[in-house]
Length: 197
Image (cartoon, rainbow, N blue to C red; front, side, top):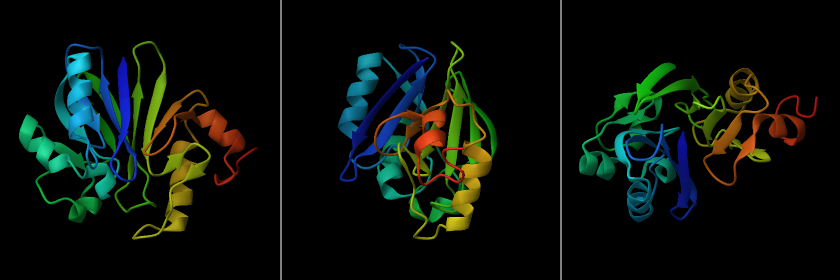
């Protein structure tokens, strides 16, 4: 499985490309602000063609380029409807379940709290590795804020019931900052419910 990522925009939000391998279809996760040039370079480097855009939530640093990219590549944006008012174009409603796209089975987990429509995506690599793309719900050493229209209790529940139930070796690809693992965060993230136990 091919995973490529880069940070872009004023808030350095992570954008990811996922594909079974180079030289084929891919999905773009969180096409945020100012991703045009680095995304074009990554697509060319790996000979990838985007077939869908996935959004972990509706904040502009995560979907700021989505409308333009959807038009340019003639691909849909998948966004949870609870975050739809942040997006000014068409989208396909994203809800919990499994979405098969670009040859990948992507499981959508509802993780409201940072925003009402926050989701995480889990993918199992062909080699048996597990990934979770957490957006702004879980970071290396931190968690998302529950301001704006989010709610602290919802965020805590999402972390406890959706993300901390994943295997320790699951690689976490967050919306900002470096990758980590569920096990590392379970053991040492001071903001997680029940961390260190």
